[in-house]
Length: 219
Image 1 (cartoon, rainbow, N blue to C red):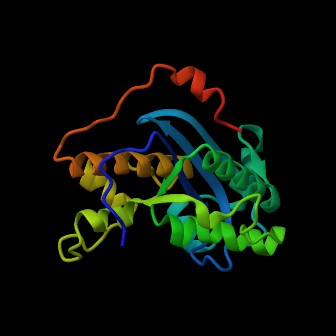
Image 2 (cartoon, one colour):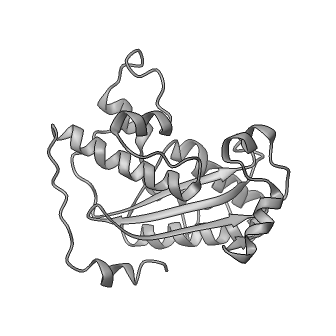
Image 3 (cartoon, rainbow, N blue to C red):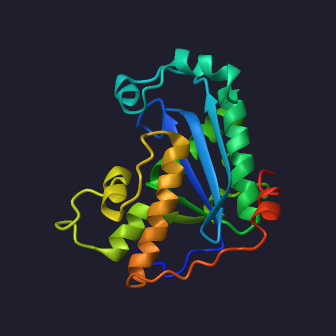
């Protein structure tokens, strides 16, 4: 059972993906969003795209609005990878922040985004992410949906707990089904949840060296 958090960890990394569909066993990520916060302050972010090796389903397109042509067209203004390159870059970022002690924050993170990453890595890279270089099972995960269940276990009171609902409930600007936007929204929801757990009080401390610290984050 998820625990209730009463403090925001010093370093957290928001993580989200947009995908070709909803099956973690057969679909691919087409964009990755990461955002790092230290002491509750945003200090670094990355957003990159992937041209998938399979079609984008109609249902997924209705959610995020991205087609393969859209992804190809982003090459002039954003980082665009093939599937292998996107997976390798995402794994590198997660490994880097894990080594720095970060907690990884997202919505349905373990069951969807990280599980799709693991299965895609197995099929594309031949890497089960269970080795000394990077063991995905060791990540410090905070799932804002599971955290909300710890805060309010009643499914009658909270029949829906998707990120859009949680943003509305906690007064956070939704990410709009954009990988970086949703990663940021999940982190902001988590921080609001911590404030709720502390009966409206926040103990967030502002660091004095944000600029110096952020210069070393990208890895």
